[in-house]
Length: 531
Image (cartoon, rainbow, N blue to C red; front, side):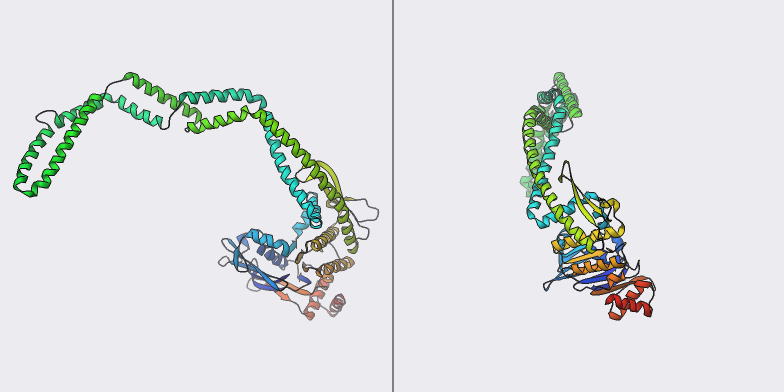
């Protein structure tokens, strides 16, 4: 059960701690006092999506902590909201998914939004299935198997449709792909070939300039008696003689010798390079044509010709064996179709059998909630196969003696819907054995003797699960084991005050709820409610 809830810097709450008890806890106060903020805080600490707008003082983080107790063992869940959310489970950082999974066994919060969701026919099949799963685990395995097979079935169906649609165009597509593949294979473009060709083209295009420049450089270095090498040789000879006289010139002599040899080698290389260059107009044309072909193919297929060639080959392979693919896929398709038909029939049988059981339970609960003439039926109609099976499920209700069954979404009043929701929640809570059930104004649209019946139904549920209920009904509040009174204060700024009422203050609160004022007469009325 929920033992306590601490809230700091959340919406209008600066700081508050609420202590809850076993049995029936009621949150009460004037409309707009902030009761739903408490439920929103509990929802948030249990993993609900929330934004930074809930932070009251933007300079401080928001903090919410919920303490649960089960058989003497405490579980503490906390959430800090600032630039990001941090969840902790018993002080250790945890993920939102882990908290949400834990929430399933701790708390079931029934809000006005959930009431709206329950009314929608599209959700009725999920409610029925959830009931069946709790009663028969084998049904869960059936659903799981059906969904897995259905997803595979739809995937194969999609592939088949695509293949059949393209079958007529396959021959033309195959011819085109074969042409493209042959074009690329005939070209036989090598890796880095374009760069290498451009480099060779650059040399051939400038052969005359390269030949003349390299030869003139050779001649200047080593071409005649006035060349640089000749002059350097004389200098080398002189320094070599002097080095015999002064060892300090040995290093200079060595450097000159090295330079002399290097220049000779360079000069010889330039001579050979120049003589090796020849004008070759034919090769020049070949280079231009080859580069032009490569650039044309790149414009056509993209810069990575190898990758595109592989893509074309893959498409061609796929198309050339598409007939075999269709045959194999059709075989798998028919096999899955047969499996789905068998599974969907079994699922439908479960739904029909348990729909009667659930309907009977709901009618019994509705009669206890002052809908004495209520009839309730879960209508199941066969529809085309879909991800949920072959059933359309819709809740049908009649609340008057001579009234025929009609869809819940169209005929039930606000008070009737509240009682249907309470009946469903009571049934599901008993099956799920959830520790804490929260009702956010489950009593909407009811009053008088019906309120008393609702209170008794909640008390019945409170004997098995902890109940936390937001209500304005004094008859329901009077039944509470723990009465929490919430008011909005306006001192320097707006804030929320939370108070657990003792017996005397409880009578005053009930008197105020009943008539809007506290008098001896309304206090006496409150006493009768408590008794």
